Length: 347
Image (cartoon, rainbow, N blue to C red):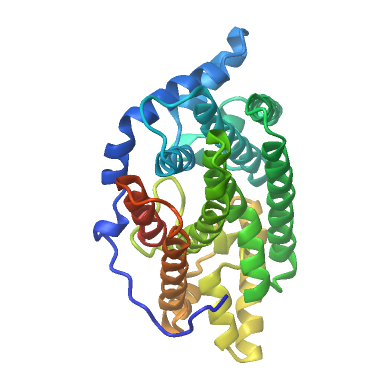
């Protein structure tokens, strides 16, 4: 797949970057989903249900289950959503949330989405075990689909997720991540679950003819989404809510804008930047902050920001093209809108 080196300007805040129209369209379906999701988190044990209640209060935008249900509608589902389709979205959200809970423990994070993390409110053991509890509920949801393909899909997804996370973790130690490795890592770490979320729609409806187009759409969308995340971490579009500016850099994570910048530098300058990132990571572990503004300025001056914007827009456009086999509908139009939102969002 080609990755454009030329600059492409994306206008932040235009209609393509707004989620409101999609939320309005999917409001009834998402209400049904959250009712189903809440039921799925019930354990019958008061203490566990209290943990679940805290997590529900701090839930995010619900992008992945909304995407699953939007794909369900785009595949032709009418009327009230079936139990299978709601369970399909539940599986996706359970897996995603469990991975975030585990990530917060590994990263020793104190805050997510502007609220205290489970590991801070309770402790690491409770957070890890609750993440495991969610994984068990997700597995039950997979079996409820009564299709072997669902287990096969998420077996591959789990493998790719863990592989992507490991590549990123090892890459932050060696600081040797280049563009080919980056795109493979992002495809595994982020795009695999988004692609699975899209594929769950036709699987829950037994409309397998739409699975491959939605698989491709989800992969391309996921990469655009992660690149935009890279840009948001650097303050492109404004500071992120609940996440300090430049957090990825302070943890020596090589994101696409930074990788592009490193490619433009002479070896001596590159070694200096990498040395400072290593220092920032060491200090970050001690709760101290190193000023990385000079590196951020360097990313801007070498075209790292504009390059990454262009690549994200390119992936979003390819995601839209992947949807051609689906029937025309308002839901298809909003899947296209979702792709542009992923590449242009401000949070």
